[in-house]
Length: 141
Image (cartoon, rainbow, N blue to C red; front, side):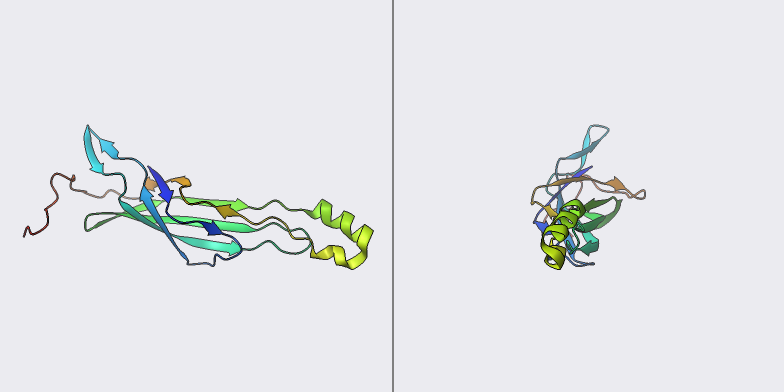
């Protein structure tokens, strides 16, 4: 299924265990029935984050998708993505040769994952999910 990120992430400010707020990007349909409607919330976390560093080393950002909520049910998901910023070691070497040690402050590039970015996730285990029409409405007991 496709999930979309509801906020922007930046490798410069993200830290491990930061939550990811996602939503289902399109209805999940099986056998002609809508099992999960678009917009259902999904949760993930930042696995690891490292900002760009000196010597031209690029940033790293690892994300993990954990589950989606369908009514009161949590559906375990699996999915992860790791991104690395571009290193600029060649630039650093050139700057060091030209400017001495001050060239060592050249940073690699940061990673920015923009709001609305989509991710692919997979259901991690069989889970019974009532269809939206079977879910009890407000005030039902």
